[in-house]
Amino acid sequence: MPAPMLEEPAPDGRESASDPYPFYAALRAKGPVHRVLVPGSGESWLVVAHDAARAALTDPRLRNDIRHSSSWRSDGGHAVGRNLLQTDPPQHTRLRRLVAAHFTAGSVAALRPRIEAIALDLLAALPERGTADLVARYALPLPVAVICGLLGVPAADREVFHAWSDELVRPTSPEAATTAGAALTEYLTDLIARGREGRASGLLGDLVAAEDLTSEEILGMAFLILVAGHETTVDLISGTVHALLAHPDQLALLRAEPDLTGPAVEESLRYNSPVHATAFRFAAEPLDIDGTRIEAGDSVQISLAAASRDPLRFPPRPLRPAPRHARTPGIRPRTAPLPGRPAGPRGGDRGRASAAEPPARARLRDRPGQLGLAQQHPPEGPGRTTAAVRL
Image 1: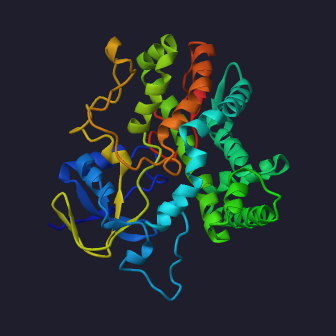
Image 2: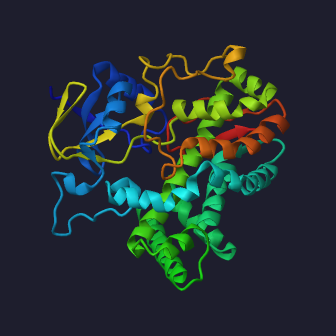
Image 3: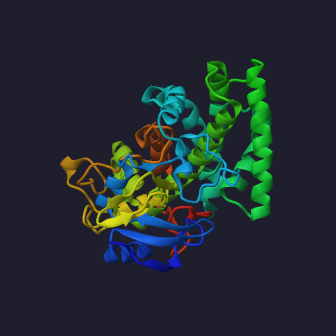
C-alpha cells in the first residue's frame, strides 16, 4: 500500500545533524517505508526499518543508474554518473575490478604504518590540557593525508588539496563549495593527464596505466574516493569518540583491554553510521518493499543510520558492558551487518577499522583520565562539523 507523504523533509545530515535518530524512530513507529521530500531532489522513498533495508539493498530491481529514473531526460538535463555509486553491472563490475586491488585487506594492512605515523603526529600536536576540536585537529586532516598518498598527490600540493577537500565535504557556503569543486576537478584532470604521460603515481597512475578507463571514469572514481573516504572517516572517528565519552564505562573497559578496539570500531559503525543513507536508487520495474508499492522510475534511499538502530533487531540501549567471554565492549549485533556498507569500493569497513586500531589504542592508553566532552549535548548524527573535547 502507498505510504503517506511526509510534510517535513528528510534529514540530510547537515540541518538535522544534531540528532536525526528521534526522527527515524518516529518514522519506524509508523512503518518501514515512507514517501519524503528530499531537499534539492524532490520526492523519494525512504526505507528506515532493518529488514526492509536488507531487502532493498539486495534487490536487483533497484538500480544505481539515473537513466532508470522517471525524471531522467536524455537531452542533457542529467549527467550520467561514472563511478561505482552511479553505475550498474557490467560497467559497475568493470570499475570495481580495476580498483579492488587497492582496497583488499592486505593493501590496507600495508598502509597501516603510514596511517599510524600520521595519526600519532596529529595526536601529539593536541594540547595536553584545555579543549580541542577533534574534527579540525584530527578527524579531518587524517583521511585527507591518507587519500593524498593513495591518489598520488605530490607533497607540495597537499595543503591546498586539503583546503579544497575540507570545503567540499564541510562547505562554508554553496559558492565556496562550488569553487572548491571546480578547483579539484581541474587539479585531478591535470593529474590524470600527467598519468597518461607516465608522470603520476598512486591509484590514479595505476588506473591510467590499466588503459581500461576513460578520463571521465577515472575522475569520477577519484572524487568518490575523496568524498566517501574523507567524510565517512571523519564521522567514524568523531562518532566513535563521542560514543565512548558519552559512555565512560565503555571507555574504561577499552582502556583496560585495548585489544577490544577492533570490535568497538565495528560497533560504532552500526551505532553511529558514517553514512546517513545510500545514494539514490531507481526502480527499473514495479516492486514491493515490505508492503509498500514502488512504481517503475521511483527513487529510493535506504537509511543505514535508521536501519542500524532498529530496536526489532538491536537492543534499545546504545552501548552496554558485555560478558567477558563475548570479547566486545558494546552490543554484538544479533543479525548479520547490512549488506553494502558504505566504505571504499567493496573494501569493507573492517579494513579501515583495523588500520585505525593502533593510533586509537595509543590515544586511549596515553591520555589522562579527564578526557571528556566539552559540550553537554554535542551533535550525535552523521555530518558533524565540530567535536569539542576536554583534554
